[in-house]
Image (cartoon, rainbow, N blue to C red; front, side, top):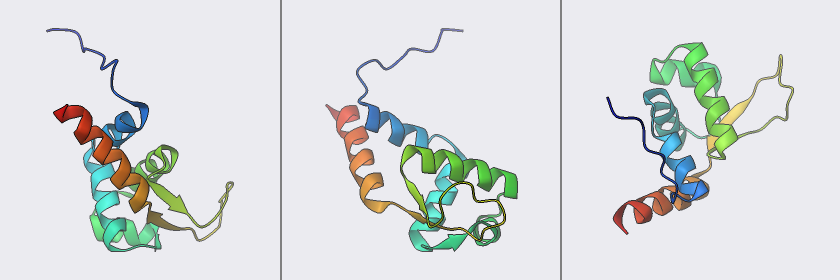
Amino acid sequence: MPARVDLVDLPPRAAAARDAVAGHARVAVLRFLLDHPDSTRPAIVAGTGISSGGVRSALAELEQLGFVDADAAQPRRGQRVRYAANRRVLTDDLTAFVAWMLH
């Protein structure tokens, strides 16, 4: 089996977009938040059918990539946090990824 080839010329934000849409849970969470901004984690779990742990991981990854914003700062233990997709960043980065693909 061939080794995975690194995409050395992929711009960083285009790579972030690729990472965001590379997994089912991340895509489902993003799609849900685009339709339901300011949702809590339990609402996302109920709306997507993804486990609580899966949603927690997807939210953490998407927030780190800049595609999801939370209304509470870290640490959040015991807080009711609402999440929203950052539509502008997502659009810009997905556009950069598509432009890179179609160059």
